[in-house]
Amino acid sequence: MPQYKLDETDKKILEVLQIDARIANTDLAELVNLSPSPCLRRVRRLEEEGYMRGYVSLLDPSAIGLPVSVFVQVSLEKQVDGTLDEFESQILDHTEVMECYLMTGDSDYLLRVVAPDISSFQRFLLDHLTRIPGVASIKSSFALKQVSYRTALPLSHIAN
Image (cartoon, rainbow, N blue to C red; front, side, top):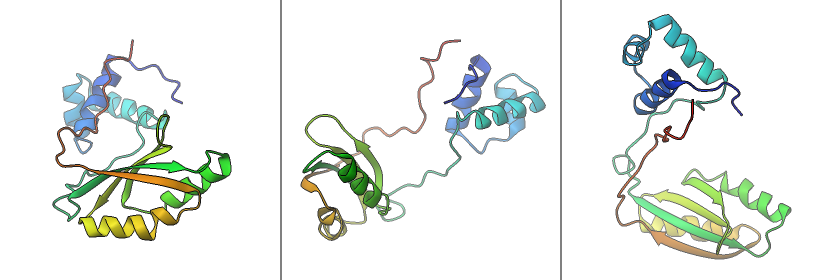
């Protein structure tokens, strides 16, 4: 857990980097009203403190042939440590599972799965997901349209 308390400049740096992680340090420094050296020191400190987990390129799923997005609710027979660990371990082996959350409510897990087409998703479901020990039920919902997708986290709640 980060120990350093963020100030307004740190928050501005994080906001800009969430939008454009490839921005040149000189441009970032100008946007946050710092000179380049102190700006770079702040970025490095924010990285070291764990505020940033890494830098990525966001790909367009349709452009790379993965237009199908499916939300899958999985219920286990029993929610005990061994069953949870086994399920999570096996889910991590499947790159089509983009997100996996342990949930409260009607199901134990919520997955977001991407696939090139419905038959590919069906193969994933039948060949992999249904074969994980302890899975009791699976409910799938196909996304018809992505209305909103964000990767930038809001920072307005952080007090100075």
